[in-house]
Amino acid sequence: MVNYIWMFLTVIGIVYAASTGQMEAVNEAVFDGAQQAVVLAMGLISVLVFWLGLMRIAQEAGLLEKVTAIFRPVMKRLFPEIPSDHPALGYILSNMTANLFGLGNAATPLGIKAMEEMKQLNGGLPEASRSMITFLAINTSSVTLIPTTVISIRMTYQSNNPTEIVGVTFMATLISFIGAIMIDRYFAYRRQRR
Image (cartoon, rainbow, N blue to C red; front, side, top):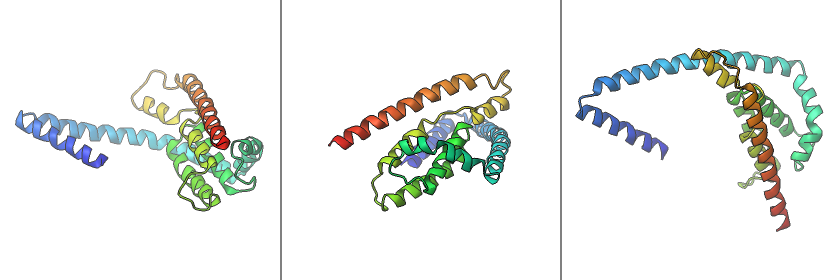
């Protein structure tokens, strides 16, 4: 459906530009947008490669397993349906760690893998389990300590101080994380009472 909307808007824009004699402006905007996309992508790639490399080193060094062991009691309270030795907890923690460093693109495959593991625990049912809902709430509102992607974008466009958003981002995401947990727990409690 969204594809049809975008196609409709594009066709309307081109028809309007052709009828008003502004096709040159459309061509200029297309090429300028393509150039900006390449510049932005290159800036993002360098930062993502750096942080993904660090995550890989941490994984190979066994650091992620140690972090998982430290946070296992907290994860057990957030996800009581998941057995403590299940791989889903490792994927959930890896996803949360990637989100902590602002690596949303790197966190996505880990989140998908965590959901697949939780779906198996749910017996393959098409309905989301309590743990899946909790994970979705946490993943959507995740705490971000270092907003890597946003810092990279600010660096690409020559911001005077690209890291000045770190404190505000951390506070905003912490508040959203706490709010998501509270709302999730409220609805989980209501669901259990029925």
